Image (cartoon, rainbow, N blue to C red; front, side, top):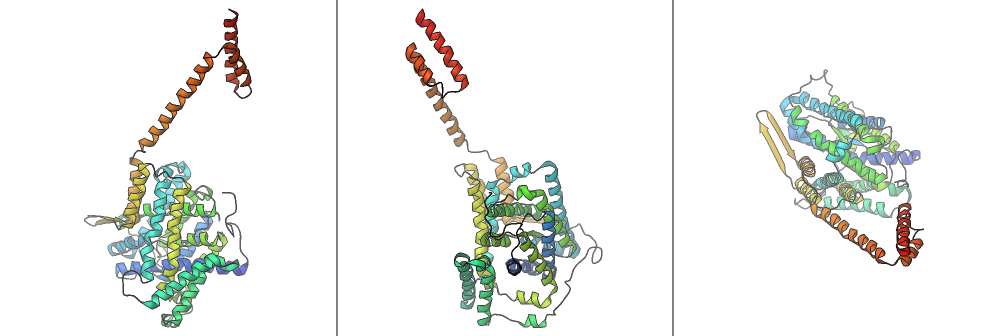
Length: 489
């Protein structure tokens, strides 16, 4: 944990030129997922609930808030959370924009409350609820759960084959992989940016880009912020639709920070502390809701960028956040970045999402989770199957509706199983048996020494005085005296 693993560590700043390029790489890494959340929420609701510029601005503001709360000790980028896509759409249909945004702000308050509880009573209760055997599979589900999205983007999900899509995706993937493994110097730490640019150029050459939205967009535009008490009154009617998802994103938060801790060689759960990281995430989510944006979460894509590029500089993350805010106000640039085709993002995401899953595996290995213990096998296997198999439970009663699926369901089941199931008794029996076997051996040695004649016993005891403890020396002296008295008699 003490050796330097990063090319640029948490408190280090690259030279100006590299600093800008590395920050832009983080922006591109988070851009696809950040703009996708508003698109999917609007599609689910059938109306415009969220906008891309507001999502970009709130992700940047949220990241800067997080950096302040953690005192610049954690290289995390906050972006729009996929876990809230369906709940926000459902809350909007139930209570309009006021119901959706009130729910998002309430989630932020839940984070803040949990952070204060951890500050006051510690996090031991969380360690019992979320041990490595639960967190490891959770991280794996985050990465592998996103895999279908990457496969769909590169056109290999069973739809009609398009050779242009496959070529663009292959170029993005291969260039990123080659730069990551073979490049030297500065190129080696910007593989995703190089891969995205290469794939984009190929897409332009193949006529896959429509620049009409860029021409029609204005150079500068103010995002369509939605402010409480100005644009709407608070509405608590849809809280029950959104609040339960806070448990899922809480688990995701801990999982991502555990994963990042393994990558950078510093325990972020202890320093800056889970109370500070959750506080930053909570305030960021509250502010996002207050501006009309989606709930924030720690971004696995940006964690992957840190791990693969070995650049953990918080100043790089901070500059990326500033760029995201600026881009939200630049209509043409937002439109230009929005023209990046799915195959380009999909080719890069093959590596990003896989890297997240591998980090979950690393958590299990580093913490030496014993899979000879049947309990651990049951917990991990149940979580993986439920999280990746599309399992869902819907609870509907009058106006109340709640759907628990995917990672949410897997997390809840994993926590319950870990708390309720006993440890494997076979392992304990083996330990007890080994102790029982070793004890008689000591007794036999003692009996043998008692049967040896007095002279030999004395000589043996004198030769072992240097290597035995003080208590044994005292015992040896008493035994030699008693044997001498017997000899005289």
